[in-house]
Image (cartoon, rainbow, N blue to C red; front, side):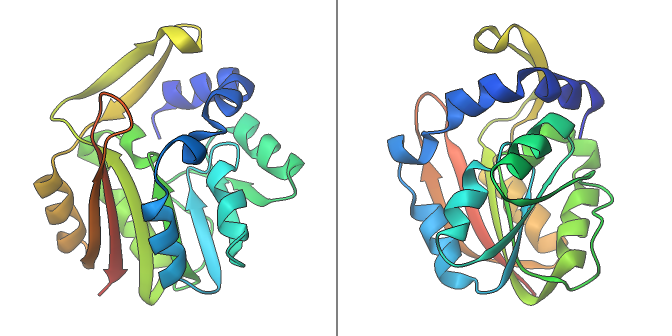
Length: 198
């Protein structure tokens, strides 16, 4: 993940946690429910943030490991009793073919497009054969730093994608798309994919 974005999340971890805690109470959980229906066993939550989604995935009787590049976010995860590790998306500290599922909801959008192939390959590496990959991104065509007035004017990197771009990215890296939905919580279209390791 972009270093400035990591620094920002370290600064705003508690505020971000409070502002996003009820995300899945306000918006449809179809992508989360579908992912959980397809996976049994060990799940890696890539870019877990404070553990919001990991806690929900645990409710489906999944064994969840959180991975985030922000020390402050991982501290919040550990404080909630989650298995959590600080780590970079480009060098995930796990063995090959270890996880039954990988969940990456609006985390990989913090990776510049020129570097996105590396974390996608890492996801594939740590997934078992036929493993399930849940991916959430935001629709658009631009990338760059965004300043958020609601988060103390901190800068974070965002890369936005078209549906076709994501389909090509997944298929090029050995994934078969098995589910897709548009999700529009406010002014943005979310691109929600579930793919299987081919």
